[in-house]
Length: 191
Image: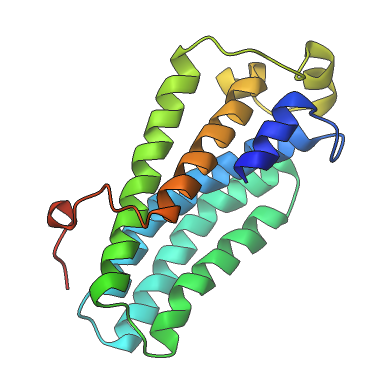
């Protein structure tokens, strides 16, 4: 994903005409996924019965669907909803088949969430405050994106593309090392 964001930052229409708009939606969806992962992770790692876990996960999924649905309406696309529910089903699958993570799997899931949050916040901070080159995302490219609404990411979409590059690359590199830089002793001990 990091490479896709970098390639789009350099050559924004190489893959498709409105790739910048698509990647903006990806980063908004990623915010919802990172946020929902904390709550859904607590459910999956908790001590409730499998039926209770499934009910809680479906309820949380329904709640977050409201936000993803709003993004889908703004971008006039269904894919955010399908992607969100695909990722949610992926999380629920372990509960459905009775394989809640334990031991190292549990620690990896917690580390993964912690790393995602830290890199997301770091990426927002850096790309909001630091001067960043537009590279290939010229004003002409931005105008052709027909981005909805307003705000920093809409007015300067090279920032959100740079953010995606930083975020997904950092998460990917951290995953290669199983996020071991995050000490297990600093993770919550739920369930």
